[in-house]
Image (cartoon, rainbow, N blue to C red; front, side):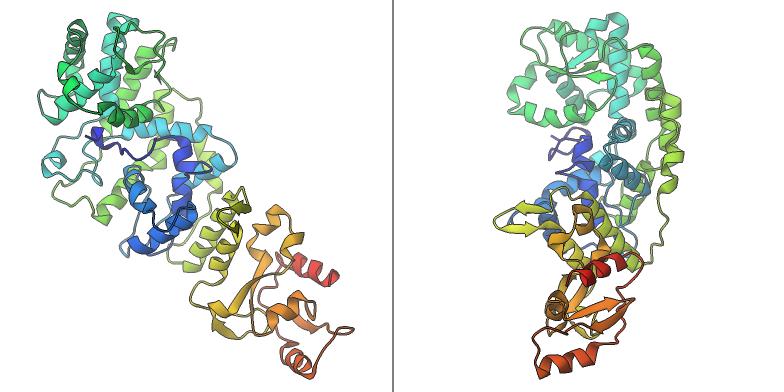
Length: 464
């Protein structure tokens, strides 16, 4: 049983979506603008996460990605950017983790069952929309009113909630939170829900919704403040010592209950338009801003100002997408030389994929078109002389063909001044064939010479 569609494939934490290793939204950024194809994205996914080729890692994380609305496709199945998450990822990369915590607190309020893009069963898709976080809060606050030390749920109590909901044993709505709290107290007085003993490995399933709920700034998994019967394990409880906890909880409940994503249950969960609409609903900046200001948990009300620097983009600009992908991948590289089975220059593949946007390339020196496999991703400034930041600059490389230009440039037989290819073979060993080749390319315009790359050409010229 997956409780209220929380995926059992990874913990829902800031680092899962935006962090250094898992970084699932970072992966989505790296394929923005690509046509969605399960096979090709699966291969790229393995490269991105450094997984063996025989591991179907994309198949493992797609449920989590769809749960969080990260995969947004347009009508042509092109993978789209999500501006709000771009902003959060950018802040996370700058070590501002707070905004991702705000987002997950907000996401808890938006969490609903049935989930339009995950719930497959027809009978479940037709369920009235239920807000699990709001219900948990409503039950906990009812228990709190009786005694703050009772404001918790044990593992078996939460499992019983999920079981009762899916089996439709009684109506689940916020008005019945008091009745449900009374039933939970009865369970405690009668040694818990006995049927739990017949369910093998139930605790494995509980760890995922527990981890998700533990993102809440007013919930805790620390059992020290609660009167928990012997032999029972805490699932989640109200964080003790929070000022005005009743009012805060009521604000969260009201917000959560008043925002639901309604959808036609007859539309398949795989429908890309439905998935895109849910993503837009989930990652609506105005709604997040309203949540921050109305719930009062965070003193963070200047999200609008912080988002001003999110660059505009035209969905139709393929070249922009390719540059966006490459920049986002390069920005996030923390280890440029990394041991896998052999030494693997992590930024090199990204730079090459950016330069060769198709199966061919145009040499930056002779300006001739060749299949990509006959062109080098040539460093304008020798890579070994580059700083880490320079290694991650898209302007530090250009295509150079293997038919002479790559070697001639690297060995200093040519240089590029003000965008023009110049002969520089004087004092070097040459043959008639080399002289002939140099005469053919000198005077050519190099389209990779620009205001951002000229410093790298100048370094090359001064060091050959």
